[in-house]
Image (tube, rainbow, N blue to C red):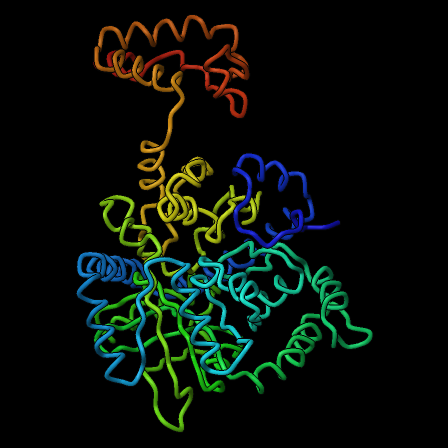
Length: 471
């Protein structure tokens, strides 16, 4: 049974409610997601439980990120100065289109018509691969999961594990059908699949003149970039080609090199459930005879400064792309990432996408039960439920909803009227008392009960309970 959404590489999908219905009708997809997210949750819980100072680390990370947001222009200029002094060329891109043009121009100037890529959310956000294809260039994904998605002509479904919606049998079928040099008799054993991908990519690594990466962190104090990964493909991209292009969102800045000590404990535990990443690459500019000789860094805005202007919504810029919030979200686990219609899915996507693209994803803040699990696991303490509610208040509201909220405000502001309303609610709900909930209400309340039950008011209010016991 397939787990793929209808063909198409565009990230601009229908509204969440429509896409979610499609996902809910795909049992294999839901099974794959439940198994994968459950496994990652368990691993994370184990390694996080080993640290007595986990909450202190979260507090420190939140403070560092808040400092970055207050000093972002200053830190960006400091980073540019240090990176330039170290031999890198720094470019500023106001949006994705400008970043794509810069990357394509650098690739052509290097005499190349293809690049190898390190897994990068920023390049997915700006649709760099699609831009390259339109320009007659080719971008080869080298991360195993990204390679699977690229071969399948699909879209990523998870921040950390883009192919999380596929099981290993489906991956084998993709390799056999789309990988020209797939071994004869390829099985679905993980080791066999990994070896097939390794052999497939070896020629790309050895012949590539240009590589493209993102960065997990950009250190203003030194002009250094940091990439953490688990497979080693990134290390190949970051060291072998002569030209390296790194597309880095300005929110990835850290003030000091010593700040990495905090994030290097939080990120691997929150993302892959590991104590440390197998590969951590840090480079500063260009060094003759050691790695790429022509290093370019594209500092990307693409709506980030607009997000920064919102004192509540700016929390989303603290995200370190660990995906812990996705792995605990009951909505994501049932729908997968495609349903969100944006490169950033799950709880973090529900608050980041509407801010990066105002007017396009106003429905995503409603793709949440507001259970708060995302806030509890976030390593940088982004209060995602708070931002979700904040964005819901800003979005378009139906005239009936506005009228209902206005009436509720008027009643709740008057104690006697509020008590009378509670009494009336208890009286009219008597027929449903035994059942405990009302499943259908007339319009406009039917907008609520079409997808959820309305609890029956309790027999006794808290005030009545208190008065009874105060006698």
